[in-house]
Image 1 (cartoon, helix red, strand yellow):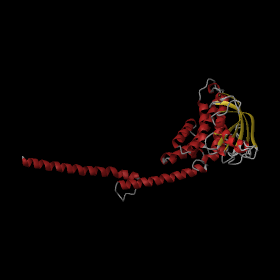
Image 2: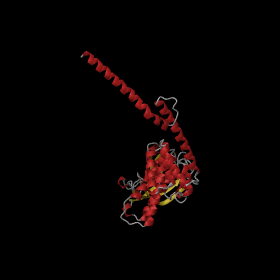
Image 3: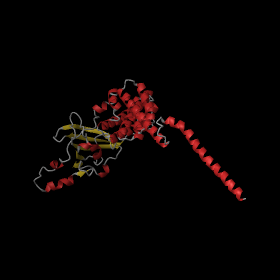
Image 4: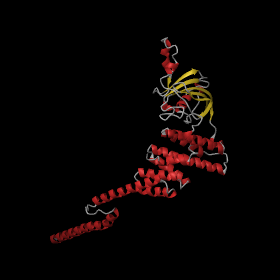
Amino acid sequence: EDFEVLEEEEEEEEEEEEEDLSELPPLEDMGRPPAPPREDTQPPEQDGGEAAEDPQEWLDVLGSGLLKKKTLVPGQGVDTRPRKGQDVTVRLKATLEDGSVVEENPALTFTLGDCDVLQALDLCVQLLEMGETALIVSDAKYCYGAQGRSPDVPPNAALTLEVELLAARDAPDLELLSGKEKIELANRKRERGNFFYQQADYVLAINSYDIALKVIGSSSKVDFSPDEEAELLDVKVKCLNNLAASQLKLDHYEAALKSCNLVLEHQPGNIKALFRKGKVLAQQGEYREAIPILKAALKLEPSNKTIHAELSKLVKKHADQKNVETEMYRKMLGNPSAAGAPGKCKDKLPWSIPWKWLFGATAIALGGVALSVVIAARN
């Protein structure tokens, strides 16, 4: 609620940048529940011996029973397992519990460990040997979650994946990517972050946006055209804005403030960054700083009702805060009749303190005179 404001506007203003939220990349889809393993391994279930082997055939990947893997065709050995950061290619078939196929891809390529695909696939492919074919049964948590994927994957749908590891190779050197390649790669990571944001998985969204920013910020041995440089900057700003939105969802205010400031370094008039920065400062109780920032955002977009409402709310909170401070000053000065603003209290403060010093100095002086008289009398 607190930070959705320009999120709706983001979807309206940035149809082109948010297309990824309505059309998923062609690198993820799967399906089936955590219980089915027994059905798949028990055709001759009534021969008691084979039923007893089922639990041993299935690997409980996370130890929770929500993600399981079973080898159908053995691979070429443990040494052939892919490493995180490598680009892997797999054959994939994903089905729902009722057997409906929701994805079939003969050669799906993605970077292992970057969460470019469903978590179930990303986690389990790390355990595959080259040439191995495995069956993966995953809870909805590691697939499309509570939202599902319209129209073919319903909410909270468990998925079953049949996966074969075809190839694994080192990812391309970022320094050698052309401007176009770097833009495409950064956009894919950003779009993946948008997918996770829509799934309310803000931690993974932040991870994807961070990866996109690392791609953009990596050094390059290739010259980019001015247009490519401008497009890279545009993608960077989008990533930083979305990163700030995700950080706000997790109440990571300092991190969100840093992300907003980075946007404003490149685009001082970026309304989303101004709005979110104002929201962060407001959450931290810094109303005096937040109000001018929201006023600047409103000046850039006077018709924005959301900014109007937020600004009005902050002005009221700031007024309430000043009233509390006034009351506090009044009590500190021990002057029940002084109900004015802190400024008025400050006006009286310089007069009250000198009088106290004056009385103290007078008492000391009188004490000194009395002591002198006593000493003189004794002499």
